[in-house]
Each structure stands twice: as structure tokens, then as C-alpha cells.
Image 1 (cartoon, rainbow, N blue to C red):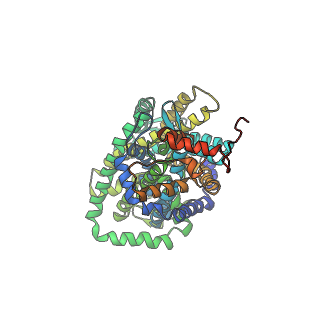
Image 2: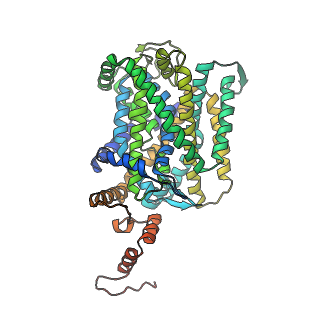
Image 3: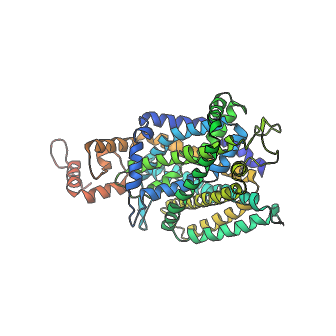
Length: 520
């Protein structure tokens, strides 16, 4: 099984995908004139001013839901793996993919808002929706939807729950073992898996609103607590902080584990963590209640900063500043750097737990276990939300009433398996899910850009309204030449009946003012 997973990953995560992620982010950064920098102040304003409705969640809730998907095991165990296999220089490439990825996040999330739909009293959307409506390729949209259901319903939750199980074993030990078809399993993991599945079932059977309400409280609180602890540890070693930054930068270009390893692991874990271009963030973006699609694109761009530049950097600095890491090229048996015992698992939370515990003795391991539980658990909720959106997309064509129930059962089973599985198998399955979605989504948003440029048109329209000093933003897709944005067309017509009437009359009149025959 492990060999099969590794073989598939070697194909999906070839250098082509690594450079596609970086190149796409750079391309959209240039095209948007680095919107992730120019509109930073507006991002903050939007976070504080958005409101929810009966049909949609607020910008802050959408940020919390998307952050719950972005901030997870990747921020703790993923960063450790990037350093362990790619060296300190991998952190630099995580920063690079986050900075450029913020522009990609703007594009995909604005697309999701433009082409969203209202279903059963809530907003739904995402790559499958905008691929169908903007590209006009329903078959491609179906491939993405099915791939996302498999990735977010089965493969990715395995990684998140596995991090929880490993962290708890590091705190409490095995607690005994039980024999199963997977071999010897620690009872601590079995108890944890049972508890997680029960809580998960209670929340996901409660619907999207319950997910949003839970994550908007938990995610910001835990992220803030995590960063505060990181600041305490960094502050206690402030004298060596400059040398740590220097090691990150110098190793990025003269990497100890090889140039390909530094870039590869940095980009792979960067994309896994911040999810820019992966196609997960747009689902939460589509659910938001906003005045203009570009607003949610800006909010989602900001979420990439929070995830990688804040949380991932906090983890990396704690690990490097306390020298709580080993570096060994993947597939090698020889350590390049060894500060810890050889049996410390790299693809897990151990580096981070040891780093905190080395300064705050007796507190580090349980604190990271608690933080990882909430980060990973809310990420699993976000994955369910994303998978359910794609089930809804499929149900638009083929009505399968039991599909949502089946998804919940499969997700809960995957979470139980992931909690008790070995880390290498779990991470391999997760990488397949991330890579598959990234390939499909990035190709999709690039094709959509060259076909119609909807997100760019929306950005230009939004910035023109900003300059005009409007108090309430509006979005008229017809005026911008954007087709198939049915939701926004109907909203604009309802809120601006006179303007809509004039546009419709103009559409049925030829250049000479003669009424066209519209009877067919």
C-alpha cells in the first residue's frame, strides 16, 4: 500500500506541479498588479465590516471556515516535515508560495463568488461551479467534483486525524495496544478516534451554519494562543533569531538537502498548508454574503497570509530556534543534521512538541496536542463542508438523496482510520488529494482567465467604485461582459430595477433603434 501511494505521489507531485503552483501565483500577482499588497488595508476593513444573512455567512465566518481548512496539521506537522526532509531553506519557499499564492487565492475565490448559486436557502459554489459556467466544460467540472469528494471526504481527513493521534501518543504514551488487521494499534489512538468521530458526527449532522458558528470561535482563539506561545519562545531566544533567519535564506539557495528538496518540500507543504490554488478555499468564499465578489477574493487572499506567514512561520521559528529538528533527505538513511534522537518521527508533530517542551517543560507536548486537536478537527469540518458542496453540485444533475448521508459515514470512517494509521501512509494519501485537486483547479482558473477574465474584470470594477467613494458596492456582471453569473444578474436586477430595465430594452433594440423580433 505504501509503495503504491509513493508511486502515485511521484507522478502527481512531479517538478511540473511544483513550478505550476509557483508560476501561476507569480503570473496572477503580475496581472493583478500585486493585489495582495495594494489592497491589504481593504482586506482588514472587509473582515471587520461583513455581515451574515439567512442565506450566507459573513466575511469573517467565511474566513474562519476557510482558515479552518488552511490552518491544520500542515501548520504543525507539515512544517516539521518540510524542515526535516528539505532543510531550513524549505521555509523560505513556503513564504514564496504563500506570497504569490495570495494572488491565486484572490482569483479562485472571486470566481467562486461570481458563479455561486442559491440552493435550499444557502449559497453554494466552488471550482466545479465556475468551471462549468465560465469554461462551459461540464465534464471537467464533474471530474473536479468527484476528485474533491474523494480527496476531502477520504484522503485529506486521514492526515488531520492522524496528527491528533500521534500528538496524544507523544503526551500519554500508547496506553496499551490492540491487535487489528493494521497490526498493533495504541489504545490511546483508539480512544481518541472514538471521541473525535462522536463529536464530528454531532457537528456535521447539524449543517453548514453549525460548522461556521463553531469555527469562527475556535480557529481565531487557537491561532492567537499558538502565536502567543511562539512569541514567548522566540522572545526567550531573541539573540539568535537573526542567525535563524539567515540560515533560512542561505539554505533556500544553497540547500543542505538539495535544491530540489528545499523547493519541493517548501512548495508541497506550503500548498498543503495555505491551499492557495488547491481549490478548497473557494467553497467557503462562495458561501459568504458580500456586496461585491471581489470583496471575498480579498478576504481569502488575506487568509493565506494568516496561515503561512503567521502560523507556519511561528512553527518554523520555534523548531529552528530551539534546534529541535533533524534533516535527512527523503529515502536516505544518513542524517545531514541531527539534533534529536534518530527515531523521532519527522512526518508528525514531534518536532514542534519537543521545541515548545524544551522551553516550557511539561507544558509543550500537551499544549501542542490541544492546539493540533482544534486545528485538525476544524480542518476536518472544512473538508466535509467542501465535499458536501460538490455533492450538491452533482445532485443538480443526478438526484441521489442518500449521497450526503453516505458522505458523512465515509468521512467519519476515514477519520477513525486516520487516527490509528501510521503517519507515512496518512501523509502520502493526503498529498495525493492535494496534488490532484491542485492540478485540476489551477489548469481550470488559467483557462478561465484566458477565456473571460471574470476575476480581473471584477477587481477593476471594484477598484473603480473604491475611487468613486461609493458607500454601497454593486456588481452588474452584464455590464462587465460576464455571462452565466445568474445569481448576481438576478440580485442586480432586483436592487436596480430601472437600470436593469434600460439594459434589457437596449439588448432588444438594434443600432438604428428598431425593435428586434424576439419571438424566435
